[in-house]
Image (cartoon, rainbow, N blue to C red; front, top):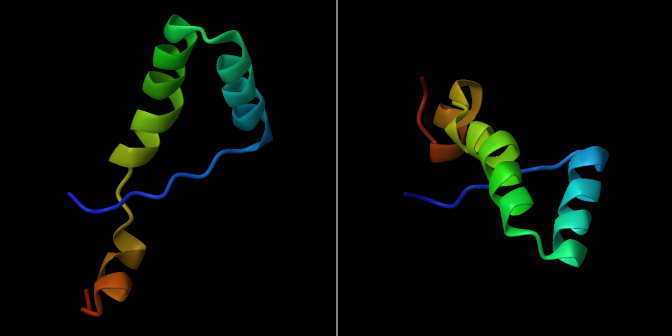
Length: 56
């Protein structure tokens, strides 16, 4: 599996800061499941050929 780039909006960044300061493992797992996994699973079909240099 290659590298994955994930972006977070302002509210997600605030949640991450809260998790960092609180050191809350349950909140961290919840964030991963609700905010990161869905973004990683998302297909990027419009860029897949462009990024690899192939035409779709």
